[in-house]
Length: 123
Image 1 (cartoon, rainbow, N blue to C red):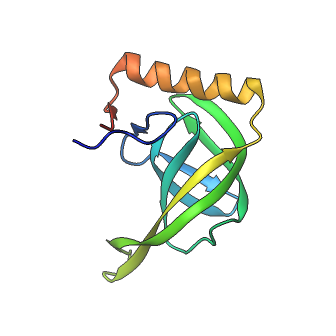
Image 2: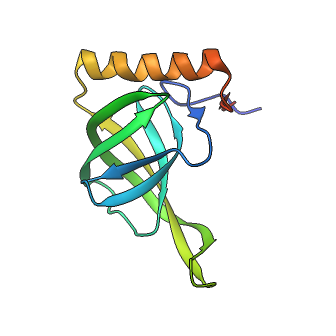
């Protein structure tokens, strides 16, 4: 078994956990930690670029800056016209979070884990 390399363990979020980047790009957030997240969306993001993120994690509103670390095609989803749309998966790290923002993330992660709301730790 490979040792976890992340500084902070990721928590898988319930399917349908959504957020927005730069107030116009709707994203699905797949997993989350105090350091970053994995997201899925219908357009590509350039690694190194930064975006304002708005989301609600476990009932806790969150806004913060995210730097995209990687982005690649991640699969397909059905569209509303019976076709398929290419989805991209992007990893991002939080940038310059205040102590208040970090506390919000910790609260959301602990609330969701304590409630057992379809979350699990990645191993």
